[in-house]
Length: 186
Ligand code: B4P
Image 1 (spheres, helix red, strand yellow):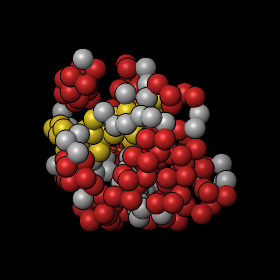
Image 2 (cartoon, helix red, strand yellow):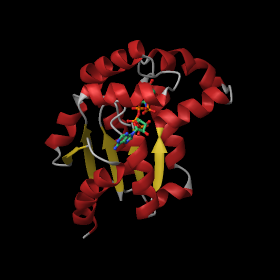
Image 3 (cartoon, protein in one colour):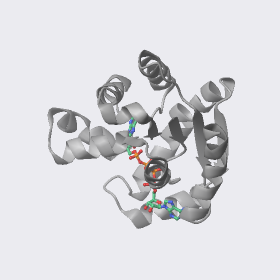
């Protein structure tokens, strides 16, 4: 089972992806976590993307797809995966389809998590990561509306999209997601 978790920064994709992966015994791939790990370890990739991630802009599609391609080549992804924060552009969505088709696999469901913007800003300011300053959060929200939100239409056209109200407790949001996972699993 491959699931895509979709939504603006701070809606809780990372939080829910971890729970979905644990409770359904599938892998979890966060492109954001992969970039932060590379930045921390000062790898060649990390050095290239640090300024981009700190600014709140999107990392170029080719670098993002390469991370996903190499992850999908490892056996732990054969049981399925929660994609967290990927795809964020139409090109990435097309790349993911190609990568999964090569593995004779496909996306079962795309879950769009919705949270009001003032709640998002509050959550991220409380989290306080390096890219969680007021200015960068507002820029990331703009990037989401301009470059990432159009991907919703790509999945809507494929009949894969469901929307969830993410403005509730972590457990309540998981319950809402799970009502859809149960249908996919049945
Ligand atoms: P990401 O790492 O994907 O981060 P995010 O969108 O900001 O966070 P997320 O939605 O996962 O929120 P979380 O659960 O943590 O991206 C960071 C950067 O990496 C991007 O700006 C970009 O530069 C780069 N990048 C990543 N993927 C890319 C791609 N595919 N293409 C190009 N560039 C890419 O939750 C946020 C906070 O809310 C947490 O503190 C959490 O505890 C809290 N929270 C969660 N659920 C809650 C709830 N129900 N109630 C209250 N608080 C909650």
